[in-house]
Amino acid sequence: MAQALGQIQQSNFVPKKWQIINLAVLLVLIIFPFVAGTFQTNLMAKLLLFGILGVSLDLVWGFTGILSFAHGVFFTLGGYAMAYYLKLNLSATANNYGGNIPDFMVWNGLKELPWFIAPLQFFPIAVIAMVVIPAGFAYAIGSFIFRSKVSGVYITVITLAIASALTTFFVSQQAYTGGTNGITDVSKLMLFGMVVPPIGIYFIILAFAALTLAGSWWLTKSNFGLILRSIKENEQRISYLGYDVASFKIFIWTLSAGIAGICGGLFVPLNNFISPVYLGVAFGTQVVIWVAVGGRGTLFGPIIAAILLGQLQNSVDRITQDWQLIVGIILMLVVLFLPDGLMSLLPKKLLTSSSNKKLLASSSDQLEKA
Amino acid sequence: MMNSQGSVLSVKDLKVVFSGFKALKGVNLEVGKNEIVTIIGPNGAGKSTLLDAIVGKSPVASGHVYYQGQDITNKSSHEIARMGIGRKFQNPNVYNELSVFDNILLALKGTHGVFSSIRAKLTAAKKDKIISVLDRIGLLEQGYAKVSSLSHGQKQWVEIGMVLAQDPAVVLLDEPTAGMTADETYATGEIIKTIATSHSVVVIEHDMEFVKQIAQRLVVLHQGEKLTEGSVAEVQSNPKVIEVYLGREQINAA
Image (cartoon, rainbow over all chains, first blue to last red):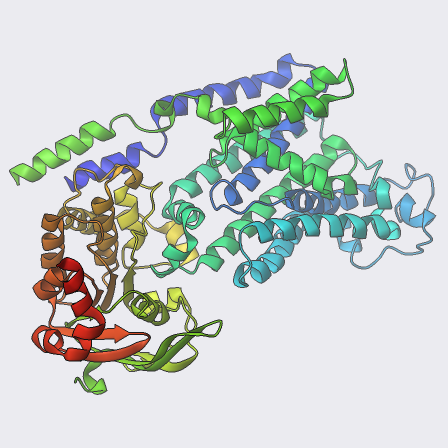
């Protein structure tokens, strides 16, 4: 009987049909850049990044119940790390303003590269920084808010404040951050002495997306994921079972920010610039919308929503400038009629094993015999 | 009265104040090894507050709580739980969105750290333990049902199962039979007696039939103070108790 119960757990892990669908989608995404043009390849790469940014928020919101508007902040911190690297590696000839320092620093009267930006000219340091800076920042604020008595909606208010404060800060430090414009005209990403073509960036992003999604799935199906869901439902109860709720929240919050940072870092070679726009509440809200429309606690939902809404925006943009109105209407419809998001349209059977009942029946039969 | 040397749990002159209101006015309580202590008293006597203060839910204004000789006053809830004090709440405090199996799994005694929970595997030993708990609370067939689909009484059983899985040295039960039928109540009483063969148990109850079934030592709380304590017979014949508590119930029953 114990064995039968064990089988249930295992078959719950990745249902067969869902595995097949995922492989099929992955295959389509692998073929996609060879069929679609450069524009669509770049757009799809961008939407995949946005989708994964949504997944990172889903880990803290959908699974743990912490609604954050600061995921744009973590994204942008990773973005700046990569943007500094690419900017600092522009060849001297491409930099019209001469010298070894970026144009915006020259314009703002800096004579030397600031010591805290200088290390980012080295690729390994930039890559580490794109994860460690957003994760470290998240760890610092997370340790503060989750160890304090702050909870629920007040945490969300703090994330809004962080997004606003950092936007103001980055805009005001023009000499170091490029101000409102951000860091523009960055160099192409070079790997192994070659410029990475758009299709190369697409595949880097696709690989990152697939790995992150698989990792998140595994994590949320583990005992750890079970604890996250219990924190979401009733965090006080779980502490009476001996779990230190704050350390679980801080961990998933930091991990989530690290993923968001990588998204931001990969976004820069694709987008060719980063600016404080992505720090702001408006972008942070977009991430929330992807998760809400796709379905909280579904992991796949935010990616589907980011791709659908992004493609919709792309097509509507040609007809009217008011695509945000359409996104707004979709959001209201989803909230009203589909509170669990687009993923709830999929048949439940796909995501859970259908053999549960049979196995359970057989296990109780065995018990009666025993 | 038990001397505090032999006590597993010892509460000394405990005071709890809620914005001016004195919920507990200096309560003493000793719980010995494998003993069942039943707390009775009218509503607002401070019974649940006493348990809250023991598990770190309500801040203690003054006084001390000792667990196996160690001062645990105002420690955080998860630390107190890890040391070996388990709590069942008045209303079934279970995870409605999770299966019965997962509720028990969460409560299982063992590693509760972040990284250990990521690495944790559902071993055969854990499964066997969960199955034995499910069997004991009579919910084996509903093992994979969401708790939200269970009846009120069954939810109470799930939470008792969680306490069993947690396997604490001291079990605190706040009205474990609320909402149960007479049969379920009786069965719960028998479970509590089995638990008490290897655990110390503190039970808050209203149902005098149930109290008679399980009680060894009775403590009566009234308006944040201990009125008296003793055997069921002693307490029942105590004129003060009859006046503030039992008498009123008998009048109500009549």
